[in-house]
Length: 232
Length: 295
Image 1 (cartoon, rainbow over the protein chains, first blue to last red):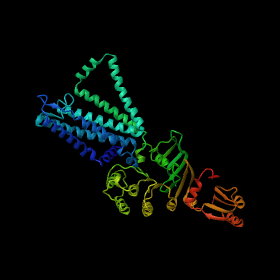
Image 2: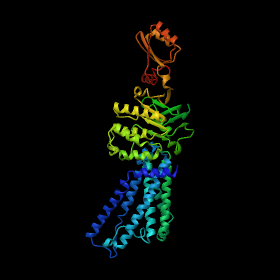
Image 3: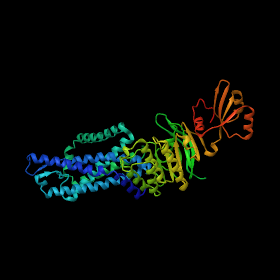
Image 4: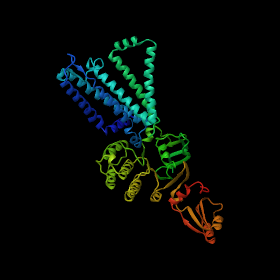
């Protein structure tokens, strides 16, 4: 494994750059246009402007292209003598690189949104209270870690499907749900909801971003363990 | 000759009791064209996938230039493995070639262009929109132009017509003559490649049944036919691949070679001796177990 090989794998993915360029930002523009149209015809409910939450669509889309990227080039990469590890790390390199660029674009749009008073109609599309609020570098970091998390998680899910098929995927998502349910049960059992609520409320957004980053690293590790014995 | 790929007692079992490879030991010699022959499901693809680190062994070991190829970029990068139904991403033909060129320092763009013309391949068409034969041709172009030190072709010409196949053989031989490298070619079209091969490995039901120099093999197997009693007498104490009887007549394929004395003796006994083509030889040696006396 060498850095040059990782870059080659990342380049390999970019041969089919349509889904990373026109598709992502075309979708983004489309959803934004719909929001603008809605805001143009519906009166504001709050004097300070409304939040749409539609930004989540690009995050969902990140997970989807993550699933695709997991195995799209894998058989071809095998033909070209690339190891599983190099393929995976090269793909993660691409993901991190793309997420830096995407987060930067989102942050610029966030900034323009603030500058224009919500696109001259108090539309808060790129600004989400608490999560994407505050100084620009916080917004950039939060966008970046969240995007990386969903993208890498998509990679992992794609690899799980490729290696363990439908049954494996069902078990995988079942286990993840179980972890969440167990967490909820423990908090309820310990009567700790108030403590949990104040923990989240007091959480600094940068600390929250660090937690997200830890989750992204865990998902990345999961993907690595999954691809190690994959066959195509 | 020095072996570049050494396969030592390799077995591959799958869950559910299928055995794809059963204690296989063989070697690929450096700068040699080896044919990997056998029936569907005999284990050819599994063996090639194991050599290129794409499949895992259940037991045994594989060494490529002395190293385990599994997850070994240094070794894998010297190999190219083109499969029968190669899966490509949804990109244009020229993009696939371009991408392949990044991975092989010996990539010959001129040869790739030449092959593209030979096979009439449309560079700007998406791989998904190619016909079956064109799809195979792309694999051949990539496989040859890469000039990988070890090139594996697994049934590379599904859907290719006879003319295109001949182009493949001609180009392979011509380029091999200029740039010798180790080539492993698995195929069903044995007679077509018979003259191309320097070494032959026949695999049947996961076991290697023939592993020999092609020149030795050609003219080694002999068909003996005549009266059953004479045939039986002649083939006693010989390596018999198949014996078939029809009334008082019998035919047997024996693993020669026969010396002049044996040939003279056959004439005395009124037996007909005939040569066996490589294809017949493979068919005989990997035929049904019940018919086979020994192999």
